[in-house]
Image (cartoon, rainbow, N blue to C red):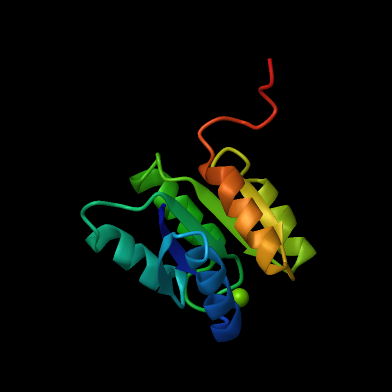
Length: 128
Ligand SMILES: [Mg+2]
């Protein structure tokens, strides 16, 4: 089980992702904007295991959030999601900071799998 901070401005997507991850036993704290997510992160003393953030959000977007978080919490893995190809391009500039970018729309199984991959202690391809 992991403690996940979720930032997503779309109510239905936020509820969908929260429910999907709770099915895997994760504890999910949801925020409707990047600025709010950053506030929650700074106020939480025992921290989170993963930040999962949408890119397009009204006040602070996922890119600005990722840049802030990477500075203040360099050990926190960041997973972004977006339905926009141009936003994906912007995020690729952050390859060092962001573990992966999940394209929208995704299924319940896809978002669960993406999160499981990031939380896995070692890359799956280590086989020998
Ligand atoms: Mg959005």
